[in-house]
Length: 340
Ligand code: SF4
Image (tube, rainbow, N blue to C red):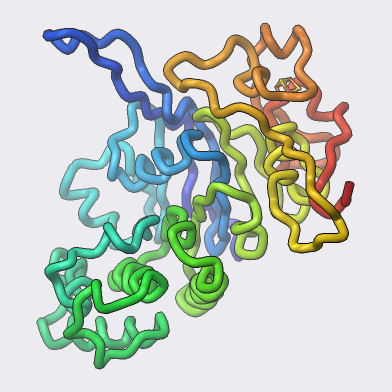
């Protein structure tokens, strides 16, 4: 991994208007992503974790402009030049998508059922006018082999494959343009537990082989533990903690991270049932709580938390660790390695 930042996101926001009445008057906004800042180094895998509805998928889609951000910068430097993805026109976007790709969550919905697998994998090259038909077909066959399928399966249709195999086809498609950066949007959450580990291992192997940088979106911390170098925890449209994977698991600094760690299932009957740490659901992003966003569910909330909104601050004795909590350097939170 190098020190070069391949991606730097500054104050990224994505608001969706709430419209009412016959004239579709805008009466408010859902703040799905509410001003996030982070960077990803070349060769890194950075996890983005949070419950459903916390804005992580919207954030991922805003980076690659499947959704247009409301505000902010997405500075992307796959080679020597840096471009702001958020400000690119259609032509510029088409060019940059060669270097930034997206793996969708649902392998059942993301593959065109009327296209053969060979066409699905070679389609991005055709759109970018890369190579001849023969060269594209050859490359599609190579990619299918790389993801553990066979070039001889190119004439088949998506419905002839299992869920895990379809996700492999989606992965092959995302690699067809030789990207530098791939956003993996919950790539294993729709799969059987038995095949999740295989697909995670495949992604890790491909990262090493093709020098890829990943942002890995997931809704629970157990999935990202082994694949991520650093992890960002998101809650109600904001990033509340960023740390290396080991630090985050051992010594969480935000109560929401601690709660997510407590929700990780343990396959050991001797340890008994773990306390359910998170009660209630994520508040409505159109109407977030006063003060700290997490104060309605936080076991440590005080009057200060209900009044003042904490910003991300550096954790004591660590240059790269940040957390958004008034008591970041005071609370002694429980990590995953510390059993109850
Ligand atoms: Fe909990 Fe207060 Fe920290 Fe928010 S600021 S996470 S409510 S302790």
